[in-house]
Length: 57
Image (cartoon, helix red, strand yellow):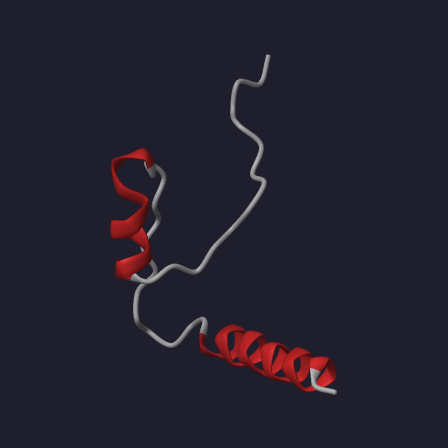
């Protein structure tokens, strides 16, 4: 029987976000600052800008 929990979300959090979550947040996997996720961050930022533009009257 597989007893692992299903992954339901992945988040990119700042240190401040993690502090707000407190001790109840127990599964954290820090990412190195090696630029490996730079393209992903840029794509997320661009999608957010596009969403904001579409929501303006």
